[in-house]
View (cartoon, rainbow, N blue to C red):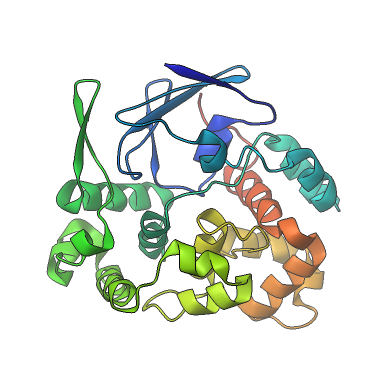
Length: 281
């Protein structure tokens, strides 16, 4: 396996905090088959050991290892609960996932929990995605928009997606018809990209923010779900001063935490959702 010496990074916290459904735990590490091949990564101390089924991969980009984490944490550590959240997972970094798997995963997340989201996305891979051979095993990658466009709403419903199937079918169709891709969206500003994503069927504020943050690299995005809403109500009453709508609270959070509000969101989300208890390693 290849090696990459790293600082200020925790693989488990980064991949178990709820921000990605492309990385699947396997043995002592994690596998991702949504990038046109299979990549395996595990961490031992300050070294990442990794291998891939075809060409080399850029872990610096995938895990945002060039983000100035010390500076980010210094800028967002403005209060007690934020400091506690950072201390809980100081090596957590915001992920950089592929656009389409990220979008569909968070469409699957609507009114759902993490185990179910993982189950649904794995089912989509098995039914409609490409296959790869790696280390004597077969892995299923996430289908492209073209491949998933061949799936009917009934086929997706049969996987347990229910009404979410309609969101996925119609959003996939729009992506193909309007040539929407990550490059186009990333060239726009955050607000423009967020608004463009909301034009896709079923994509609301939270899903759009998740895609902006975890795929498009808009680190100011601040997704608000039930866990973050609880944090806001308990610790950040100032976020509701200007109004209680999603948009107003998100805007207030971005103003409060600044350009790295997305990092603040993920630290708060992970700390709150786990109750301050680490996942098994």
